[in-house]
Image (cartoon, rainbow, N blue to C red):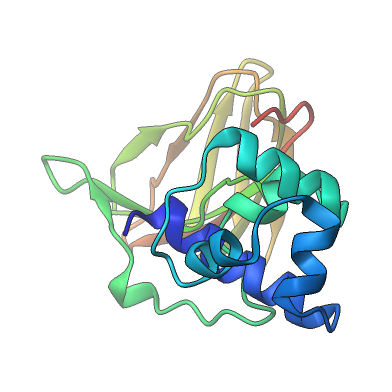
Length: 186
């Protein structure tokens, strides 16, 4: 069963049960046979677009509600299990703690920059970066100038404009970077 079929199966069953509907009642509302609905909920059928359209029209939910994986109300992120992008020379590493997706128009990164090293901006999209310095001193180079930001301080900037992060100190620089997008289209 594909991930899409699994999502449809789980979401259809969840929606039906949340509305206290039997398969017979769902069949009446959607015009899809009870046996087909049962097969869809069990993941035994790959519903056509026409069938999905009947279902979403009948139960009055957006198409996306049926096809996307249901998010959990609480999600604990283990940073040690997240993929890390490392510069080949080891100068810096970045991990996306909360990458951008269809449910949110922001991203959260953790960046670690070794002493004497630097890296380019993470994004150049229409939005803002909010950078919190956890450890060390950030030297931020922008088109407007250079800014020094110490630990326990933060800085906001236009993400669309090119910028670079530098660590001119003697210890590792650790940043938490929140990127919020102005015009988000998914």
